[in-house]
Length: 236
Image (cartoon, rainbow, N blue to C red; front, side, top):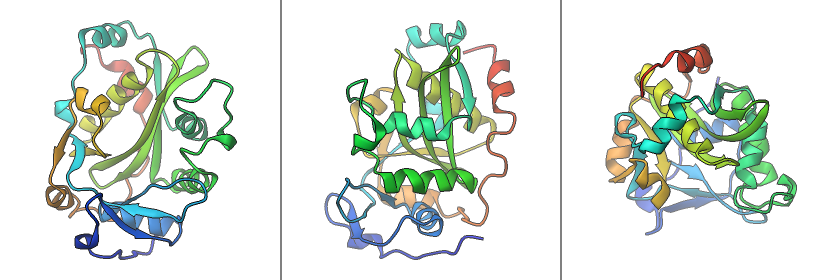
């Protein structure tokens, strides 16, 4: 069972939300960090940096905004949506997002080798999860994050086809609503997520939403029944 590791008080964050540096990316450290509203973000060659920005960008599942064009894509079932079928491939897609098509994950700096290995371990432990979108047998988009309590901590998404990552997010939101999740942590504000309905809330409000999180109780079988449930949705 995970051991709880306490981080410094969030009052110690600087104006950008940087709280601490150093440590490790073990399962216990990561799940403890997320449960306290903290996440790692650093580049290759840097010490591990731990962040808790104020305000915090979140997406409440009922507030997802989808355009008319995206509604048509979903209704036509242009993509097949799955969960936890290609976690490593999704994290590699996120690592090379926005880089030339022939860029290998090893040469990307967005997600370091250390980060990749740590989150794959979290996936094996039942804490981290991926949502994939497929065109036939080709992976064309997806996202990954961590589920604790009734909060999904989104980490990154990628798309190799128009709307593929948005469809993955739509699928995730439907699943989280089905299981009565309260919010998705989006970490730091950006125009793309704001356009999809995410909004900033004070850090103290975000931390309050984590009060019920118990790192000993990750959602059991998070992806069980996902494909069938998403396929059964007949209205958007």
